[in-house]
Length: 180
Image 1 (spheres, one colour):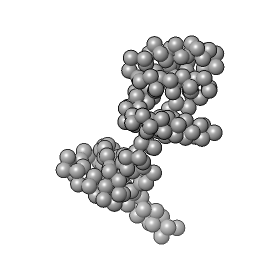
Image 2 (cartoon, rainbow, N blue to C red):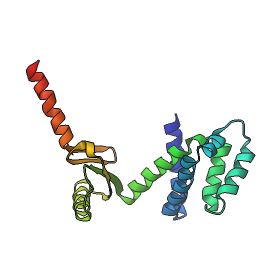
Image 3 (cartoon, rainbow, N blue to C red):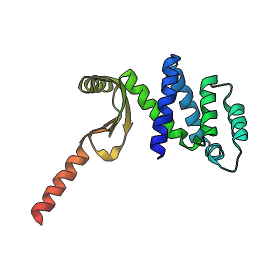
Image 4 (cartoon, rainbow, N blue to C red):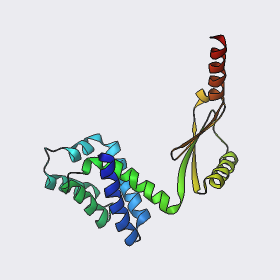
């Protein structure tokens, strides 16, 4: 249910932002709000609370975000409060960014390696992923020594596991089959 709500409201916000030619600005503002809600759990709890009246929630949001948000984004938050959908704000933000990435033909990817990749390695991998996906890839590198070697890539809902840890696990599983 919450996924459907998030899709419906993010689509509506996306359409308004597209008409107003504010897609990126709206995305940045939405990220600002969702980051604040993630950082300040009490604020998010208050926003979701049925014990706090909608007008009090609007006043709270206005006091906190009026300086940083456009009138349109602030009004969108007010609509969510009026419709008792503010609890889905994090999911709405995530869905909006998926729509924005699809519109811009971009995708985020994370390459996890045992040691940090060099700038040249990141550039080369980004080029390969861009070529194979047909989308402009934004690549981040995370370090996890437990993978031993190789690279684990998560790009959207796709996973490419070229790690030494996976290969060793496969060998271990094969040996267990032979021994049994």
